Image 1 (cartoon, rainbow, N blue to C red):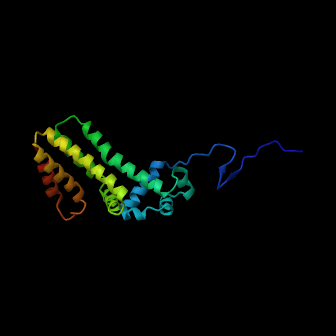
Image 2 (image 1 turned 60 degrees about the vertical axis):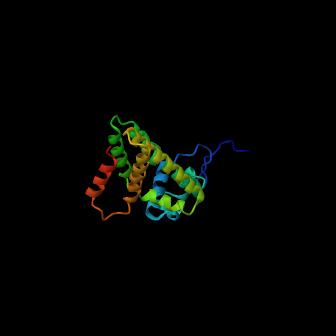
Image 3 (image 1 turned 180 degrees about the vertical axis):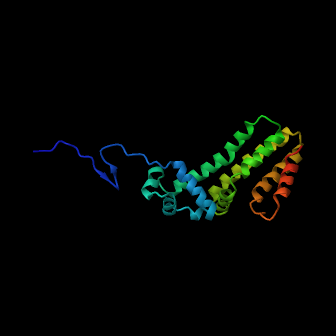
Length: 196
């Protein structure tokens, strides 16, 4: 006699063999955010699947539900940085009804809200990886072009637009390193760089 009843098999390795796999409640973005945090703390070398899974309280199998491998996770980190750290800020600033000065000040606030640890870790990674360096250069060019456009709206001539855009951008990246400078001094510098 042949048994015709199918039995659902549920194992750690294969999930529910006979039915659809239950989706992991931890989202792909949560894994990316966790990787960004690890990168901010110790560079790209710090982003390891085992460490990340332990930090998030998940198994490595949960990680592989969302990503093929570590390089796929790192690609998602870079893509998120490009989108959230650049285009999302540009969109937010462009959505503000106000003067170019208002927009420059909003951009400064948004860009410095979450700290720059991941930004600097990504830049350090770019020093060792040509492909990442190419992407960082493209982001820098896009950000500087946006700043240049805001300074054009202020009516500055070409040379002053380039100078101000570079100065404000360098200050943004550099503030992470100048921790002994009073906030009032940085605020006054930002004020000078965001005024007509």
